[in-house]
Image (cartoon, rainbow, N blue to C red; front, top):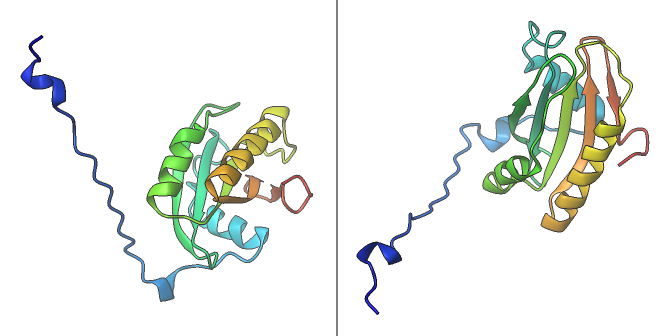
Length: 153
């Protein structure tokens, strides 16, 4: 049996990550309030009451911010956050922990069943990968709801 020359070809995969912020200059998250302030500062104020977005704060072992990843942008009533994409980014940045966040354009801080279900799913996946899901914040321009502060994580 003759084999094709293309049968054994494969793309080389190379992963690189460079943090352009010096370790001494990275923000440190010590509470849900710290995370909320950081998110609000980095959220598009023209969009926070218009469309729902899902973001992830990536943290090192000292809870210093490695970056904020914009996982998805949706419509007025929801957005889809893909766990595979979220953890691909967390693994690539060598994050030890993550904080999940999404906004409610309505201004409501009430969590939905899908919000809780996704939080539980991501926390389980993080546990398997040794990446802690420290919190999930629902944010609005006027305040936030923390799953961790309310004993739901």
